[in-house]
Length: 392
Image 1: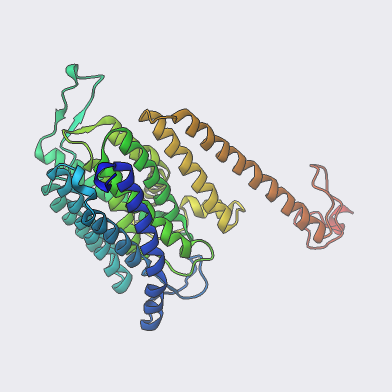
Image 2: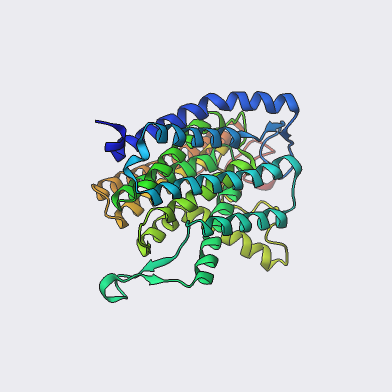
């Protein structure tokens, strides 16, 4: 069996190569960053306390691009129609351009508006090359399944909003070690499955290579991280995820094709929307930096860094499993059942551990058991606010 004869073999090969290449390159990128002093300095809004290299996106892009190039060289894209092949390279070119915009911000601290203008410009060029939302199929509204063809202006606006919106949702998610890479990797794996179920193998190849890049980078980025992906990495991930969802269909975008990435990425998209609305309500710029993101809220609720990331992971994988049900993936209800069990089990275990740690903290501070009654504490610093003097 040749590589070109099996779409699944192509996807697996792309995943493995991207993961391996990225894992190998990350330490070298980190060493170069340290050598040239290209680091992210700590500040009160950030979680790290020491300077960190934030060029990890370089390794992710190299891993992704080389994996696709090697797969193409081995004939893996031979099973695609020429126009599908072209869309893969257009997506790759667009992801590189978005990465360069983010990298420029990492190196020169650009203001938000030039970055946004650059993203819109690249999205317009990508649209002109065929990566576009050009027609939408509403099978339950339109007889015969005839797609609704969008006028060019509406198609352009929809495509730009889609690409730029998802890109920035992933960028804003990148606030904790391993968070953006893990969520993007889970989303990419989900898109591999649903792409193949919808016979969109071109999108599946891209998603597999992206998932591999995320896994390879996560090896060095999970808490405690040794390197950050930077805006270059998060822009690359966000654009590629957004583009994958619209490069697959041969005749037009179906409502399912658009719903699936929205469903899988609903957590970062909802977080971004809530943050923007909160800032606008206070009369601030949508780009005003603050600590109102979901991961910040979970940290303030008492979850540790790792547990916050883990909670968002398990919720994302549950959303990906739900997307598989919508897409009628084989064994979809089995995957949803497993994802639900993982989600519920994780929440129960984390809650129990938090309760145990609080009980241990109370014991170490001289507090009695937390049974809902008035506490008997012997420590003047008791967190219950019920000191011996107060007990009278």
